[in-house]
Structure formats: C-alpha cells, structure tokens
Length: 200
Image 1 (cartoon, rainbow, N blue to C red):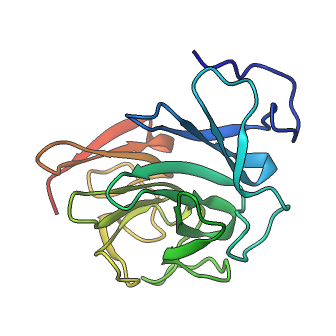
Image 2 (image 1 turned 90 degrees about the vertical axis):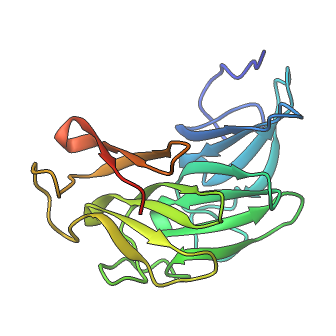
C-alpha cells in the first residue's frame, strides 16, 4: 500500500497536482510526475515520504529540470523513464540513477511548433518493442511517431493544426496505448471518444 494522501506542497511527503505514474513491476517503486512542483518523485512500497529523482528546481528547460511533467513511461529495457515534459514541449529520457535527462523528441530549448521536429503541449508518450516513440501532441491535434534515435516525427493520426470530429481528425488527444498487434488507441479528449488506428 502507498500512503500518499496529504496536503499540497513541495516537501518529500507532499505532491502538488500529480499526473502521470509508473510502477516498477519487480521493485514496486512508484514513480510520479509531480506537475506543479516540476519534478519526478519515487516512492518505495509503503513509504510515506518520497525521493526526488529529477527537477524540483522550478520550471525550466535545462537537462536537470522538468517543466510541468504530465506523462511517465517506464522503459525497462533501458532502465529509464520517458517523461512527457508538457511545459517544455518535448519528450525526455531520464535513466534511473543519473542526474539529468536526454532529449528524445521536440525542441531542446522548449520551443513549441507545428513542424515535424517540434511539439505543442504533449500529454503522453509511449514506446513500442522496437523503441519507436508515439506522442500525443495535444495542441497540434495529432499523434507523432518517431523512430528510435530520430528527431523528425511523422504524423500518423490527426491532421496538424486541425481539430475536428471526423474519422481522420483529433481534438486535443490526451492518452495513448498499444495492443499486442501494435494497433494504437487514442483518448481523443475534446471529441469525447476513443479512436483506434491500425498498426503504423
């Protein structure tokens, strides 16, 4: 059991508007994207106080800071967390036990945009078994696909900058998951629906 109920704050036994969580399947460590504290925390099973892993220095774009993190994806293959860095318009990788992140998608300086190398308020990021990255690029109303170690994304769902209700468009996509055949499911939030897209 995790005892994480408490008053809002920035102490190690407090959180402020947490969003994404990831649970390690063998250690049962819980990782938390602490949105308004601009940090990533970890909690051992049963702990009432956490450990600061990354950030906690205020909002920023250097590689020891995170900016309003929302999504977390635990990549066991690389022993890392893939962090959806909402406020910095990018996706970063934090290897557990280190003290900084590396960029895997978006602009390293936190610049938003519509071109294939930029994102606009991303809300979720996941990996497939080949290490390719899928990003819910919320304010661009699209899902971006990045091959492993490539920074030029391909739009595989939605139309950049177009929010609509038909079968080829999205409106503020929030969350993603893949099935075992790599079909993609998208929480199309502002259209109040879940969209399924066949394997890319």
